[in-house]
Image: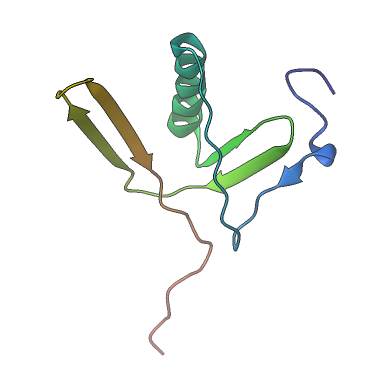
Length: 97
């Protein structure tokens, strides 16, 4: 167990069948590091694991991934980037007999 990676046994594991949402306000550098780490997991595998000191969320994702870019240039301009990952199931389709 380290400060950056606490013992996962002490954290709540978020599983299917539960709704979960957290919002963080980070500086741009920390947000960039987070996005890089997510990008590396998306590029290198089929599983994504995110978490903090209190929780961990393992997620097996599939394709296609939805990416939405929303720019609002009025008043106080803002850019919103949303990534939606579909879950992957281990179910197989029916067979013809």
